[in-house]
Amino acid sequence: MTPLPPCPQCQSTFVYEDGANYICPECSHEWSREAAPAEAAEVQRVWKDAHGNVLNDGDSVTVIKDLKIKGSSAVVKVGTKVKNIRLIEGDHDIDCKIDGFGSMQLKSEYIKKA
Image 1 (cartoon, rainbow, N blue to C red):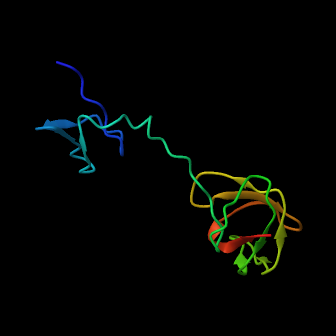
Image 2 (cartoon, rainbow, N blue to C red; image 1 turned 90 degrees about the vertical axis):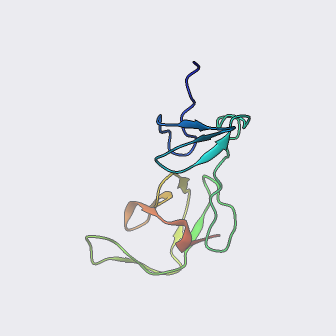
């Protein structure tokens, strides 16, 4: 008996066969036995700003909304320019340093490419 592959979506090992398909009981994902492995279909993530422009590491961006800083009374104002951004995984997907505020993370939906 050959071991069953883990689920490509949630990596669960509780996969079972149902006819010509594999089924994951944890996330309900179904895929064909003949489907290519998930590693071959790996997709690069693309970060976009509020207007749909593609962002890259090192870009300069502008804040398009007043952003309150958690735990402080300070606010990053509309039009604040941020240089040399770094793109990261997660909810706040931009890591940067803002003059007068220091290092912080921003969401790409609140910035536009300069």
